[in-house]
Image (cartoon, one colour):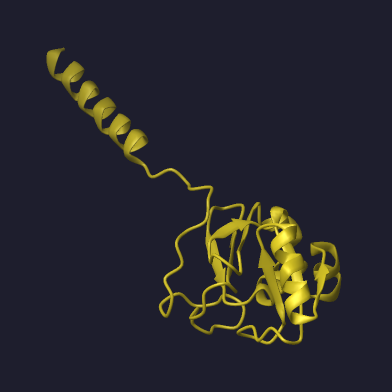
Length: 148
């Protein structure tokens, strides 16, 4: 009887260890490893700060993009598959939630894949960029409709 109880306790201890030690799915963005991470859209290495973005799918997997345009193309093809969405603020290089970004399209902006779209963490920064580059602000809805 003591052996059975000991075996049961051992099994419960192993089960508890597995449950509590199992890694939890992250909900935020992952750090970008420049010149190591590869764009899920075009397969180029991410090499320039201020242009990249990330998507986290419903399974918790993160894909990274070297250009906001590559990210938008992926989103346009499967909009409900990515509950986690971030773009790099063009000024600071920090990943910010996509829904809070203001986007600027400018032919003067030489983005990694030539889409000419960059993200800014706030509208004031985007408007300063428009004044400087001659571009214009665009909404995510416009970007998705045009495929970037």
